[in-house]
Image (cartoon, rainbow, N blue to C red):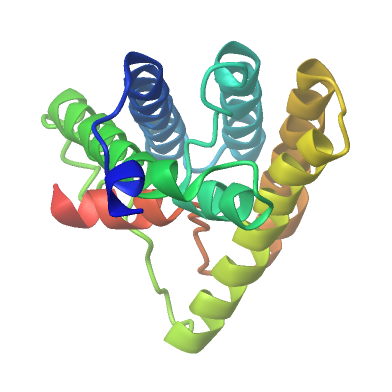
Length: 196
């Protein structure tokens, strides 16, 4: 039993893990960079968040599922579209990719004195329990928006469009209405700036 669960990964498995690391790297770098550089431009932030995830889904969905988010991988595992054997390697790949993306971001913005943080989740007068509740709700909604279309057999391009529209609407209409709350929607997005 344990031999099959913890056997060495195959080349196909390694390809999936590398794609998850690369996707999370790109996603965290692009979205965090945009939100730091154009923090007052909600439309631009919403557009970058939506299009970057949608494009990554189109490019990588057939290889790894394009989760780029441990919460999505967990949702896929619960829905039985990700094996137990792949769950921890996906988490590790996403963490490595996310930390790499934030590390590159720290290098890119290192001379900018206006940027004092690397996109850490900030609690501006919001109780921690409320932030955890908001993160749980919004991340669960994102996970459902990604996992359900796949379970329903919707084409990858339409699924990417659904996720893009969801993220765009969430960033444009919902999140700005919660003062002091900068959504993460991705556990790696919360952890990576703390590590770097």
